[in-house]
Image (cartoon, rainbow, N blue to C red):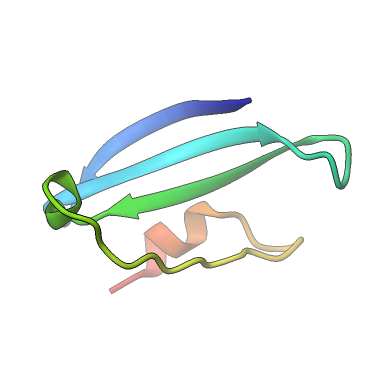
Length: 65
């Protein structure tokens, strides 16, 4: 099950944070998705950034430029 944790306006688009139950590790995991403004009306390419064990997913949002 995919659970939307929060959604925030960001650079004209939307930054969403989700949680899901991982079957690989048997624990809940989190990930985030940035949707640019164009995603509201058309399909857009996706870029996946996987944070490591020592890095939180929020770091990408905090340091991206």
